[in-house]
Each structure stands twice: as structure tokens, then as C-alpha cells.
Amino acid sequence: MYKDSGFGIQPHDFKSAAFAIPTTCDLCQNTIWGIAKQGFTCKDCGYNCHAKCEMKVPPNCTKKKYIRPAHGSRGTIYKPSKYNSVSRSSSSVASTGKVDKVSRVEVEVDENLETWTANVLYDHVADSTSELSVSSGDIITVLEPDDGSGWVMASTDGKSGLVPAAYIKYISDDFQALYDYDAQSREEISIKEGDIIEVTNRDIGSGWWEGILNGKRGQFPANYVTSLK
Image (tube, rainbow, N blue to C red; front, top):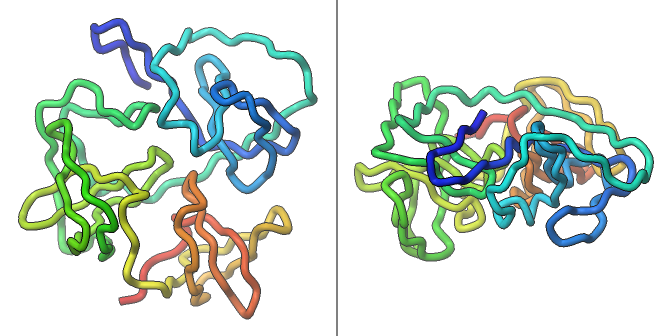
């Protein structure tokens, strides 16, 4: 997906993954284990890492698969995405959380685009034209939530750009399920279309949130719900 920008870098093509069998993180060398989206796997070279380590991985993909010491097979689950209303001109967010060669970011917002309101927790100074500078206490509109890259597309004061997902807190807590989802582990909860879920944690990572439904707390796919305004 990501091509060499001409500066000798080869970003990884990461996909969020669940690890049913203990697997070693190729960055920190600690174990990744769990079926509730605990990390990422590069489609091209098979590099594995924790969700928290993904933004620290250097862009040095070999584009070739390599064999690790066997610890058993690994189950990988990919999630669907319904967020396609935001366009980024001449840019792509690489696995390191940085943006390849960028000239500008165009955000086309129509009246039907779903947005969220969030409070900025920490200052962020943009270091590229694709990012948005924000200050602690700012109220921003999130146009596209974190898709696993660690960034959200947001706007404020007529400007739009990328902001670190960990630097914001969503204001609304109640979300409605758009689709049915059957829990795959004890850490997850099953939801049905129309269910009202109280979201308690948006920092699970890899496109998963934690919430409470019918008195039970658990994780579910973030792109299966929509905000109640």
C-alpha cells in the first residue's frame, strides 16, 4: 500500500490483529497475547508489534516474509471500516504514525458526514502540513476517528488536520449500535443493532472500545456504533 517516497524508507503495511497464541513483539520483545485486537501485523513482511508499539516501529519493511521460531499458529482477525467520507490529498498515514510526502490536506465535509465532539487534553504542535495544532482545553470536531494509526482527523477554527488520538477525550458517552456483533472472547460483549451502549474507554486501541450494556462491561468494534447527540 505504501510506496518508497524516495528517501530510502519502506513503511510497514500494518493491519490490526488478534493473537490467540502468545507471540513476541518484534519491537519491545515482550509477549502479545489476546483475541481482542492486541496489536498489528505487517501484511508484507509479517512484522508483529503491540498496538502501543506500532507508532515507534521504524519504516524498514523488507517486503519479504521471514520465519520466526514456532510458537504455534496465530489467528488474525481483520475489521471492516465504514469511514470513507474524509479524503486526504497527496498523503497517507504510514505505520509509524507519520505522514508520507504531504503538500496539503483537503477535508470534504458534507451534511451527512458523522462527526464527534472532543476535548483536547494536551497541547500538540503540528510538525507537518497534514497535522493540526491544538491546545489543552480546545473543543474540536472529530471528522474521522482513530482507524488504528493512532491519529484522528479533526477540525477547529476553520482548519483541519491530524491530531494524536491519545490527546483527546470524546465528550459524548452514549452510542447506538449500528450492527450486530457476537462476542468472540470473555473480554468482549455482544451487541445488537439499536442497543444503547455507555462507552467507558476509547483507549483500547486498534479500533476497539470498551463499554457497558445491560450491566455488563466489555469490548466491541468502535466502527459498529454511532454517537447519540
